[in-house]
Length: 246
Image (spheres, rainbow, N blue to C red):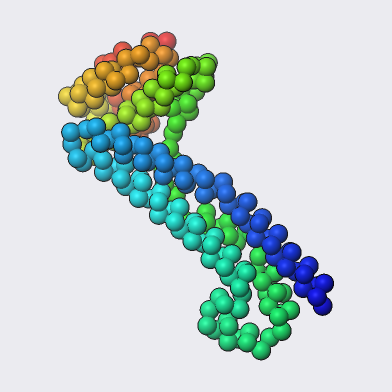
């Protein structure tokens, strides 16, 4: 009896460990999204418009909620698995007269397969996926390897990616009607020229050192955010771009 109980305890611990390992990746991804959203929030604080921080705040809030929900599901699962007789008042009452061995059988059955926990965590709404500067650079110019650049220039690329993204999100937030009309008439660059010129001037000033590198974060996020992936919706792109030039 003692040996059998010990084996079940070990099986229970193994099942819990497996559940934890299986869910580390989605939790890490959500934590990274929260970190990126916070970085965008910091970048948006440089703007003179307080509303510029709103998109980053919303993404940070969504990521934080998703992370908290995922951790809550996992912690509750572990607590119930280790203490099946304390899962609730009705459970405690129902198992008050049961043998300890029966409790271990119920616990073992509850955690024998960690897929239920995975499904619970996956069902939690996740924050919109972030796109790194490295991913943008690879998508636009497959031969461009950011990893070969000095550390300072790699940091500039990451900051340029965030700043360009925040700038386009600000324009979409503040001028939604013009953005929609620009997509419909395929003249986004012309219709939003004043706002784009201001954003581009600041972008050029801060990232002049890497403007000749074969990647254009400003153009990339304009297409993704303002044009919703339709390059033709931009109309005539008025800014020098090493990507379009090539």
